[in-house]
Image 1 (cartoon, helix red, strand yellow):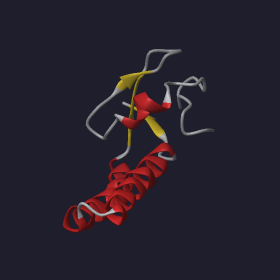
Image 2 (cartoon, rainbow, N blue to C red; image 1 turned 90 degrees about the horizontal axis):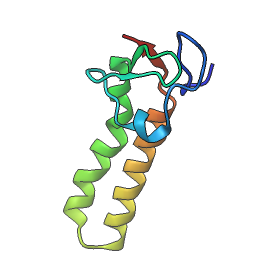
Image 3 (tube, rainbow, N blue to C red; image 1 turned 45 degrees about the vertical axis):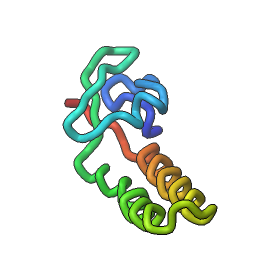
Amino acid sequence: MDSMHCPHCGAVAMRYGEKALLGPMASRGCQACGHALSVRWSSVIALLPAMVAIPFAVEMWPTNAAMLLGVLGVSASLALHARVPLVVR
């Protein structure tokens, strides 16, 4: 099952932008069945690339390398968060 599908009904639960805003304490209803969905606490690990890259980028600011490092860190975090499975709350 894809990480964007509802574990209850199997339909596409939400768009990527909506899932990117989910955290372990936040939930959102499935578009198909309405069950409250969230992500596991382990999804916090997906934030590590951004949490490591952004402080280094701030120290190197305003160089091009700082901007690239910040964009890569946030992009990696979003890509990892997209793979985190949804859970029914």
